[in-house]
Amino acid sequence: MKTYIGVLGFVLLMSCGATKNSSNSNIQEQSLESPVVKYNFNSENLITNIKTLSDDSFTGRRTGTAGALKTKNYLIKALKEQKVLPLFESFEQPFSFVARGKEYKAINVIGFIKGTSTGKKTIVISAHYDHEGVKSGKIYNGADDNASGTSALLAFAEYFKTNPPKNNVILAAFDGEELGLQGAKYFVNNLIIPKQNIVVNLNMDMISRSDDNELFAVGTRYNEAFKNIVENHKQIGEVKLIRAHEGLGSGDNWTYSSDHAEFFKADIPFIYFGVADHEDYHKPTDDFDKIDQLFFKNAVQTVFNIFKEIDQL
Image (cartoon, rainbow, N blue to C red; front, side, top):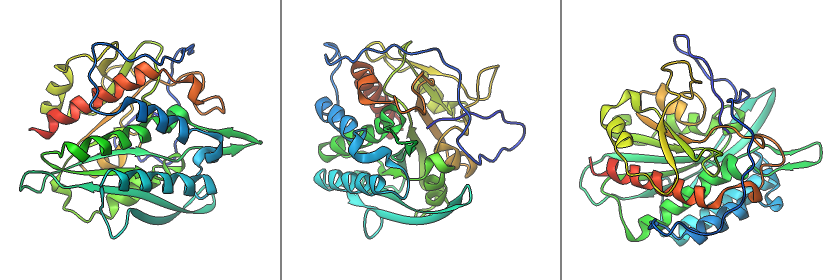
């Protein structure tokens, strides 16, 4: 889920309840791949994963529920199949927190890929896997929010199996985002590597549909090298990567809109990738059949290309 908040001085994000303005969506599912795009991942697997993770059987992936446990197990199985190593003794980073007067037990899923260089620089690629669960008997499947980012995370794992990165990479599937960025907060506050070794957090939250074929990149205002990479990237298919929502001008500020906020507050550089809210945002209609498959594939490849350029800095 993405929210925005106007920043006056230093703002602490306490919840994820606000939304961004966007026009209504009327997205048609597309199954054909763009003939001019060469994907760095198996695009069929990408679609299979988002379809699976947004299935009713996962009951909306609410933190602390059987659906969240099923999701956690699904992610760990997928990471193991791609030979990803656990960052800790296991892939699980359990934690607990209190939100809205209730105590929750949550689990981050954290993988590690050793870079080919001898340096200690690390890139954190993240996406939250939790969503809203079941409300009034209706399942909030969260296909775009955020089965999309979670599936993209698994695409990175697939890529690294045969294309090891230059820098170390942490793949972080965060829990508890919908309840106040809890998973990212716990991860950042309990780092087992020096904070200064983290080059950037690349966070993906809602990247599978856009009426206007727009994918936003937020956070480059704080890093000139990242700004240049985003501004000079080669467009993938119809996906327009746009630098915006960075607290400049009159647009909504997305600096605190998702898990990347916790990295920002810890002075760790970030780039957040996401789309504008749509008519199914935080509704039980955010289902697999509403995503734009072609946009999704090309959006993921766009993030891949940005990652590869940063990895070579």
